[in-house]
Length: 106
Length: 106
Length: 106
Length: 106
Image 1: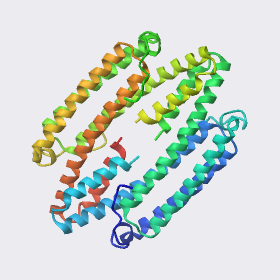
Image 2: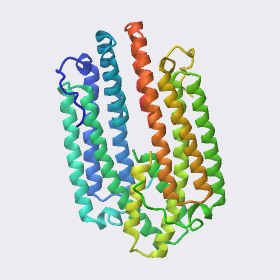
Image 3: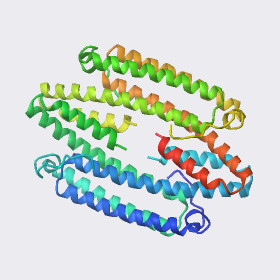
């Protein structure tokens, strides 16, 4: 992982400030875990590949929805950090954000 | 699911003809299941959103690799069906294939 | 370009066999050229970035539609080649096709 | 266009504040216009579909790079607006941003 964004204490940001968003994201991820097990079953039962591919794309869509929610929290966190910090570190923040979007949004 | 391609008996195609591909796909999907649980942990521990997003994109990448393998099996199956069937049903098959690619490859 | 698929004589495939598809594709590409000039105008007039981004994504959608049509022609051509050639070269063809899809479909 | 973001006076934002970015974006878009004409030539000469698809994907990549630059300007503009405006309108801004990313980044 080329992204060194990990020196962040838990509790200082995003999800911790939004307990409802956190619960919702966890529910979604548990459902996605179930969908991945469903895919295993389909492969095990040798279902038609096109049907498995359609199902797989709906798991990807569900992950994308989780990503969308996390990104929203992230922007919120970044913006409030930027407000507190003034203009100076903003340039680096834009670069990191745009990088995150264009490398990691699928 | 708008795609009604499911009237295919198990054993008539793709994965059944390739036991190694099947085992490999199942292994990948089990690893992906583990990665999804890892995401749940990260959310639960309120890790930095950007880090979760990077991790999420690597799960998506892993799903994409599974899709790629399934698509390979699917093409193989479609092509051999087309060879047996002659030209007539081919037009519909191309449409279904292109649809599958452009709607469902992420 | 890592893809060495270029030793193909014009006229031996896809588009040449489908003059209507060719004309339609050219019409689409000319419209896309116009849309790209429209983007230049928007940038030149310093329009709101979000609006330019929305416009840019519609150009990308239009290019995707062209790709879809080309892919359809390509599959048709590949499949008929496979029928003529028998099973032997098919494996390489599947690999090339899947590669094309997963590297180049956006 | 479902996105009504157009009531922005030219000169109030992003590109106007960054003449170098503007010139660079225009240069890129002119090059893309040339690439689209190149695609027309390939189609007209009935080149191999796979080769045209590879070329088409490199035009899409180039448009994506333009989008990336515009998004960077946009974030910069949004963030500075948010700083000036205080917290109130921020929620709507996050929604618009995330929408822009997930609907329009390809």
